[in-house]
Image (cartoon, rainbow, N blue to C red; front, side):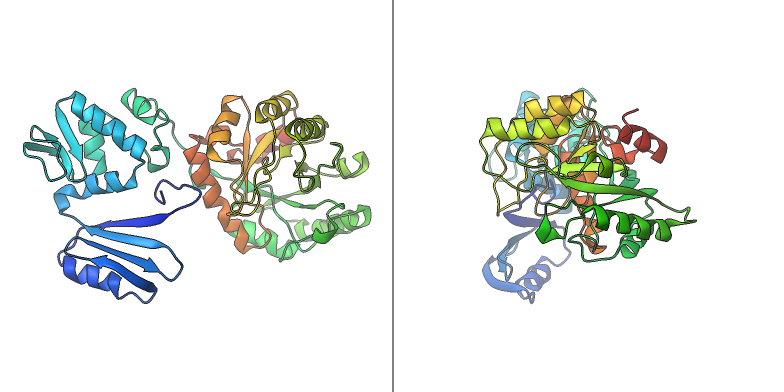
Length: 394
């Protein structure tokens, strides 16, 4: 599940080829962070780390390495489809390799080994294109690989900018200057500062006066700077009645308007949906951020009709965000794929509250890949003129 980049991981399987397997297993069993050794032998060692994570190490022969990695990567659904495809050809696939003839037992089957050293050769022998690990969930990827129709998945290097972050002007931990330098160091062409609006008092939201003073500071920081374009934005709270937490005069001074739910999470689905749809209808809104409002392991998603929300986004030329924060990862991959199927564009945003937080974009790209997204599906893979045209709803 870790290699498939699932949003949560139960344990980790390590697969290795070793000239001295016993030494490798002993190294894991005596690792400083091991709290308990659950079992160890010639080919497998299981330990619990002090963090609570279980780690299983398996050593295999080089000829079986690819088959073992394929098997332990999963998912179960993906592996079942591959094994059935092998059976349809009169072959057998297991964690030791792909074989013609022999038996389908747990031990190495007899017969001729067709493939096993690498995943690539196994997929090729089965008549399939290589399936990236993030897609191996039994969601049509095997049929897509057979037809040569898998997407060219987005890469982290495709991102040209980040349009969701916070500074010390609201609840961020680093200054405007530091955030700008952090984005420039990542090679971004553009960025946006999107501190919170005024109703979020605990987050130090921006009122009219603070917004004017922030923009004055920004003007001084970016004067004459050509390496990165800094856009003026705000994350605007959607109030209970669906109105926005800023005046139209404030919105007119912004390049990027992100809206999100930060209160009244318990509203019934119909009321919550109506509230969000009303906000999305405002002509200045560009992005609907962390659409489900969830915090993994801490707060459940809000009850909302995403089909209706996606329709409102499409009608009003609003993108949905995939929020890369490790505690959010929102929209989840399944819904993100549905959003693109509905014709929407996606923004991948860090929601960074520090320079260090800018690095979570890789987590967002992981989830976008699980959702089958390409660079074309994501607005902030585009050059600045195209992004500005999107924000202007041109």
